[in-house]
Image (cartoon, rainbow, N blue to C red):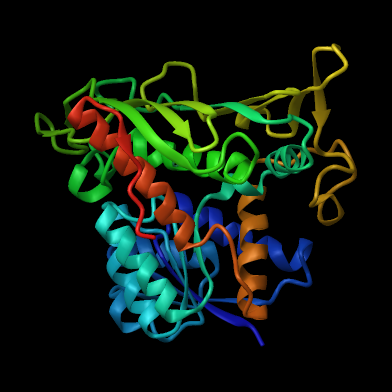
Length: 376
Ligand code: 4PW
């Protein structure tokens, strides 16, 4: 029987997930079938256009009226809207997928993770970069000891869509609506990859302490279609952070939405006692690996037998792109729901990342290193 899916949000992420729903029966035919039941939003005209384009059966302008009518609720709305509808769905026993960061606030994320624990149904936080074949291969290499003891994790995520001071204001630039800027939008992914790749590796483990710095370079931005009107920017344009892992490894993170020339540059470098590896999202079919044989970094083409998804797509060398990560993550999540099995990255992982982000913000305010505070 097909899973009825309700989706709040129909722009960037709504399209990315609807594309995944459409691809699944073609490329992952064993994944449970999905009925694109209801698309949720406020602007009726835009919503109806999106319903037709994205292939949903119906629309709703109030999430409250439909959140308990579906089998899976996808919360792809602005960050401030993640907590309340997701908790309501969980209280009705509905599985929930939330985009990242899990919430605009640490309190919201904590409540969402608690609701997920009580509901006991699979939840997902949208850390889609865990589903890049090269990242999964990197984890395998680290797990099998190829890099030895982990010593350094370096992660940067740079974009440039806010370089122009005339780029218009949006909810992503407001602390109440978004929580933070580059930190939550981009840093959440980097922190999650640190957890995924080295969170259980020798020498690294959990992130214990952080030192962070946030900066807003452009403090006012024009309001679209309102000549002469501006609004304040109350989130960071860029952040940097140092990490101390419990096993002794060090970490360096940076994120920016004002880095000219960098469109979606998420680069990870990991050094261990026996080798190193390097990954860049803009070349996501490759992984650079430095082994013990003194031959320098070698580029592994991940669209080969090391690609865990190769059987689902094209022959080796027929490269994958950004949108495939959403297909892989939805295949795993929907399968977990059908099997009643655990899924990762869950709301617990979303909360764990948010606790690190909160510590980075606290450090920016205090000017000191801060411990990452956890519930357990
Ligand atoms: O993964 C990225 C996000 O964190 C996306 O590619 C775009 O930039 C959308 O939001 C951020």
